[in-house]
Each structure stands twice: as C-alpha cells, then as structure tokens.
Image (cartoon, rainbow, N blue to C red; front, top):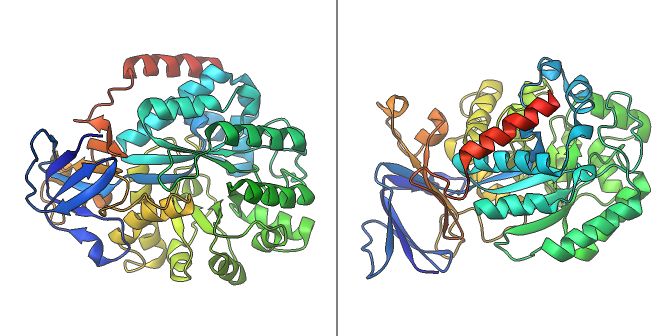
Length: 448
C-alpha cells in the first residue's frame, strides 16, 4: 500500500488511559497499513498522498464491542418504547423477528455499519442470532463493502426459555447444528491475526437459560480448541440475578466460572449488577466487559459502574447494543453517554475524557483480541478518525482534544481502517445512501 500523510490536525488522543494520551498538533504518516510516524510538521514524501486534517482532532478508530446490527430496522417501535427488557422483547421482537429474511438482515446490517462509520467506528462486534433469516455471511459482505473490521459473535438458543421474564425470541436449534455452523463460519471467515478484519466468536444468546449448563461448558471447550473468543449477555437486569439465584443457586458470574466461561478470551455484555465478589472474579480472570450505557438507560436496566470496574482492573469497553433499544448506532454518542452518565452517578471525578476514549478504542480492541488495534502509535494498525470541529456547537471550545467527546455529534472528515479510507471528506464512497434509505423504508413497511 502506498504511504499516506494525514496533515494539519489540531492534535490527537492516542487511546491510552492517562493524561499522556494527549498529543499537541501532529501529523501522521501511514505506510503498509500501519502507523509509521506521528510527529509535528511532517513533510510529504515524493508521490505521497496527503489527507487534509486542518481543524480536525484525531482519535483511534472507535471499537464497538456489542451490537445487534439487524435491529437497525426496529428503531422506536411504539410497543416497546416505554418498557423494560422483558416486555420490550415481547412487544418489539416476538411479532417481527419471524418476518426477517436475508435481504432485510443485509439492509439492517448495512445501515448499522454506515452509522458506525459516520460516527467514528472502525471495528464492530455483532452478536447475531437470526439464523433462520439466512447466512451470517451477509454481515461479512456488508462490512467488507464499507471496509470495517467485523467480529461475528454467532449467537443461538438450543432450549426453550425457562425464564418466565424473558420469552423465546428465536426458535431453538440443536446444539450439534450450532457447533457445525460455528465450525463452518470459522473455517470460512476467521482470521486470528492481531489486526484481523474478520473474526468469529462463540456467543450463546444468554448462558443461564438459552443453553443447558452442560452445553455451556462444552461450548467453552469447543471455542478454546478452535482458538475462538467467547461472548454473551450477562447480568443485564435485577430479574436476571434473581432467576440465576433461584434456578442455579449462585450468582451469574459464579455460574459462568463453574462452566469455564471466565478468562482473557471472554468478554461479557452489560454486567450492570455485580456483587463485589463477582467483580473480583471478573478482574482476577481477565474477563472483559462490554458496557452499553445508552441501552441500559433506555430500558431502565440500571448503570453498570464502569469507574469501579476499571479501578478493580477490569478491561471495560463500549458497545452500542441493538438499535431497537438505543435507536441509533452512533459510537461517538455512546462514548459521550458513558462520560456523562458516570459523572451523574458517581461524581465529576469518577472518570475522564481520556478514560472514556480508552474504553472506546484500546480497551475494545483488547477485549476482542485485536492486539495491534486501538492506539495511535507507530507500528499499530492505521485505524484512525479525523473529527471536524466545525459549526456553532464547537465555537468557544477551549479543549479541542476533548471536544468531539464532550460536545458530541462531531462530523467524521476522514476515517481509515488499516490505512484504507472508509470515510473521505465526509463521504462514504462505497455506499449509495439514497438506495439504502429506500431499502430501509421498504423493510420497515413490512415490519410495521
């Protein structure tokens, strides 16, 4: 790949979780898909392409560690707009998921990925469980079209739900069929490299009632034998805690430990309600957490205490969750929500801009096992975003480096994934947005 120079940025946040994350005015040279050099006033080499970043701030590409992309066609369904998780599942999902076909999955995923790219995300982990609707390959195709990294978390249900609070939203499949499908997906798509564009993860929908305990243990052993990471939902609501105590006579994290589902190759979504002993277990095992503040607030599930988790040594990343319970796939706004909600819950010194950018970048890459992603640093993959500070919202701003996060809605001027442009001069050249708008409207008409 030809070298590229990003020139004129006001400065950068590198993705480190410390004040040292801040860099004053810098240019960035990219070569061979990697960051080669970060320094002020770099001069373009003969024949080197130059991207104008005047008036922009550079961040590492944002890493979304929990999503349900097909739900982009289920935003704001009235039946679930004022409900908690259980009734929201009944009102929004049960009547509509059987209607989804492969084309609708493609449209929903493309719409989610477009929103991701235009909000600064370069990597997405999608927890996908609509296997009656067609091959998961359409998700990889959509990500490849835009140029984003995708971790496909292959979800499934193998037993009818025994939890009266949460209905079956997809039909159960046989456990053997689930294993065969994961094996096939991994053979076709999984790349274990440190800056992989395609990963497959093992991801039962919910471990305490979507599979049997014996199957959960077998899934862990299967995943580790194949070199696949593991992901699922856990401890999202208080009802979830009560159910696990009543059914399994333990706390959810203790249940996971008993079935070999803790470790550095595991990251768990939500984790809103943990007892102190569970936090200690998560930290000691190196298990990651995908924090979804907008979804948790929207459904009234609670606030996962990110500052306490990170202080305990847990790697906490961010996820936008499904657009059916966040109404968007806007990664920068998710990071802003995290910055605000924890200051509201725990005081103004509970977290910092640098902490949240770290959660949205490097911590996400660590949780997904992408060791060469998530930092603006020579030798790392050239995943970076140039946010514009333009318009009245940014006039009067004293802290340019914090501005994209604390103000929100910053426009992406340029976005690179492995040195390749995904967004250039604010445009997505790979996508016909007018056709996508039409396709989404047609799908919503079927689902209404």
